[in-house]
Length: 76
Image (cartoon, rainbow, N blue to C red; front, side):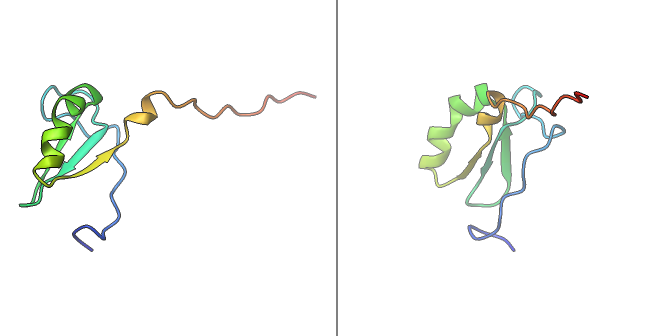
């Protein structure tokens, strides 16, 4: 599937910001094809303009402040 109906692939640790090389948390899929990846910092700088130009924005920056799941302790 392609286009707006296609499910977005989750960003991985190997996806890097096109601006600085840090881990990418934001994907901007351009209406003319292609995509741009940004760290949270650079994404905040560019996302408004990209959205105005028709880009589809996938923002996973909330993962930066999410609390990781903790395995229950093994008490006996």
